[in-house]
Structures are given as structure tokens and as C-alpha cells.
Image 1 (cartoon, rainbow, N blue to C red):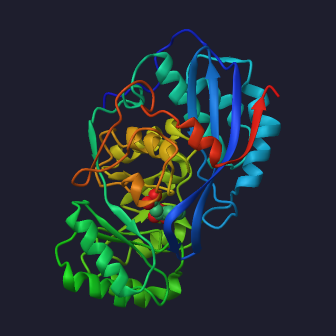
Image 2: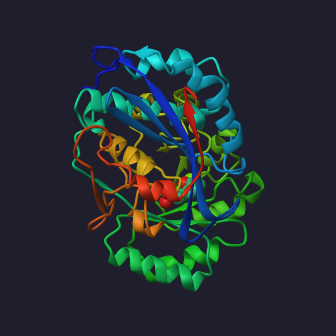
Image 3: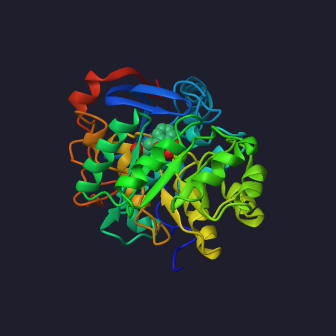
Length: 379
Ligand code: OSB
Ligand code: MG
């Protein structure tokens, strides 16, 4: 794969200042997964400024550590007290040059991604190139599916029909114990040929082998993260018994996790969320490792607003993103988004925003109206 491992050298970019907000957006409808229900989207939004340019990053951590062991409060503290004071006023030649600032700290991969991705946007803008181009991607549109939250079976069936009719390229059903086999049976009966997957968000254990063996018979493209969020070993045991591929999400937070998963046979597909794996540089390393293992990847989502969504779209332009991602139309999540550009799919294809960096601009007056707190660096 002809992809630069180190980004081209250029004039160092000085980070003049930063602005860190917490933003609250209502969701069009509540989103239920095995770990709970989200009614609104609360997220950190970071702006890095250099000369006349701005780079944006959106944190994907939830208020509390229910998806992974990272929450907004802890991430904000690390950004405020440690990371932002270390980068504001300093210059960095390329995104890799940021890594020494981030690497000493254990975990906090979502917090690190917030800074790292904002810097990639800023850096691509300083080169006057689209983010996808500096990442090594060439697609002009990306295939996407939808992730349907847990609802009564009849409601889910209506949603499947609606999204199949809109041309979405894959349907992912959220499942949990007691809401699995009957749901998939009903959907498969009505949509025998649809590209179908399930996502359990770590709700099962090896003691649920009976359910897993039944799920193995539906021709699913993959079963996403059925077992514990931090247990690659048990997924290897399960994958050894299934015909259906396992796709890991929560278990993969670094290229080292991906190496362990591939080497142990714990997954045959990997979900990359840049916001979960410390940002674009690590995403690209996972992407390349998976390509070497002939393992397809796809880009997951965390109900991102326009900044995170635009980052995901650009990342998905890389060649080994070979399965439809979760980056569906913004209007499925929000009545009004924080960016001016519409991020909407046409027939299951999301156009990659043109222009430098992530190619979207903030709707500042609306953003101000949904900002819960704001801090500046230097103060
Ligand atoms: O497991 O992929 C997941 C949303 C929140 C937390 C975890 C997950 C999800 C989704 C929705 O599946 C993806 C999206 O539509 O952004
Ligand atoms: Mg998932």
C-alpha cells in the first residue's frame, strides 16, 4: 500500500492558542444499546489555532465510563491541566511530532484523540490539502450503513425497511441478552438478503455459547464485540467455534491490541474509531496492519456531531476501509448540527467534504447556543 509512514516535512506549525468547550446537543430520538440509553450527545470540542487557521477535534468519551473506561470529566482534566498547557505556544512539524507529548500517559485514548485529530485538521489546512489526502485516502464518497438502537421488534422492523429503502448499504442491529434471537429471526424473515450485522457492546460471556451458536446461523456479515470490553482471549475462544466473523470494537484501542487480536484469531474484521484509538496516526497503523493480515476494517461511530463525523468520513477514504461504516446522515441524529455543511448520504454513500482539512466549518452562533462551558489556553 503506497502510504507515507511519516508525513512529509514542512515548516513547523506553531499552536498559538486553544479553546476547549463542552457541547450539548439533543438527539432526534433516544439511542439504546446494551449498556444504557443516550438522550443527548454531550462532548468536548477542541479548537487549535495557528496564524489564521483553525483545527477542530471532537472527543468521543461519554459523560460516564460505560462504553469504555474513560469519561468526559477525567479527559477534560487531563486536557486542561496537562496536555493543552504542553502544546500551546509550541511548534510541531507534523502530527507524529505530537506523540511524545501524548505517549507518556496511560490510557485516555479518547482524550489523546481529541488533540491529535484537531492537529491533523490544522496541519492539513496548513498544507491546503483535504485531510483524506494527507492520510493517504482517495475515495470521493464512502459506503455507509446504519446502527439501529434497541427498540421493540416491530419498531426495529419499520426502521430496517426505512433505511433499506434509503439505500443504506448495511443494517446493524444492537442486541443484548433477551433481545437477540427473536429480533434477528424476525428481521431475517422479512429481509433475507440484506447485509446484516449485530453489535452486543460486550453484553455476553462464554456462558452464552447457546445464543452465539444460534446467531451463527443467520448469515450475518459479523458479530460485533459480543464479549467483555477488555477480553481478547475469550473472543479468540469464541471465534474458534463460529463460522461468522467476529468484529472487535471496544477491545481495540491501539495497534498493539489489533496485533494481539489478529495473531490470536480473536477477530476477522476490525471496527476502527479514530476517536477511540488516540486519533488518525494510530488508526492508520491499525488500518495498515489489518491490510497486511487481509483483514477488512470499517469506520465505527459514536453518534458524533459534524466535526467528529467529518473526521470519520475522511479516514474512511483509505483503501482498506472495505466494509460500510456507521457514519450515516447527520439528520438521523440531530435536528441541527454544529457545522454549516450538510453531512447527508445519497443512496448509502456519504460524499467526502471537499476543501482543506476536514472540509467543514463551524456554525458559531448555533455552537455558542449549545455550548455548556468554554475555556481558553492561554487563559
Ligand atoms: O458500539 O459502535 C458502537 C454508539 C455509541 C456507542 C457505541 C457504539 C455506537 C453505535 C452507533 O453503534 C454508531 C453511530 O451511528 O454513530
Ligand atoms: Mg460497536
